[in-house]
Length: 302
Image (tube, rainbow, N blue to C red; front, top):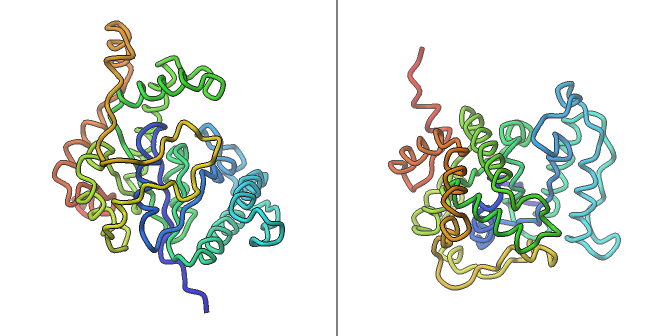
């Protein structure tokens, strides 16, 4: 009899917030199986974060199946060696159940009982994804907005053909603000946890211990010694540098990339209200991780 899936995990956050970094560390756990970015729920719910009209009616056009086709090509390159693709569905709930079953099968085939899906922009649908997927926890990775904008601009300058238009700081400002708003909304529901990139990189063991406690899996020292990408970073994703050397926060590019006027405009454009609240809450949170479950339980009764 196949072991049941213990937990289904999602990692999301603004691009360049450290989502891949956390994915690498969790992939070092003996129970965790992870995948290349699928974007599967972006296709089902809305690529740009705005919920598609038919989703409100519980319907789907079935475009999410394309994401599973691409994933299967990576996971089982030999024809017929992987699980069968689910049929095209009309009902969103049925399609979501198929997605979950498909990822469950891939995870069991790898001998694991926890799967981890990391698509940064899934953060825009975090609350809805969490409601669609049983036994799911959505992990939000948050990083200082100035450093995120700088990293997005730097990446666009290094890979201009891949990230056209993202060298304008206004793009990064919009993405960070939208991601923070989505996290704020999601934290009003159970099943969400927040990890700050800067704390994870400077205090990795304590942060991972706290996170693993929330995920219901024991911390393993091997998570800190996971230098490989484990096959979940595709060959063409050259902007995702492999983890090597001691774990520490990436150096900020904010001062070096922008002149004084641009730095001022970025600071004025970032909506840092909720981020400030997070810094305060996470500063006193056990294990450096803030859980929506704890927050909801502590709300005073009306």
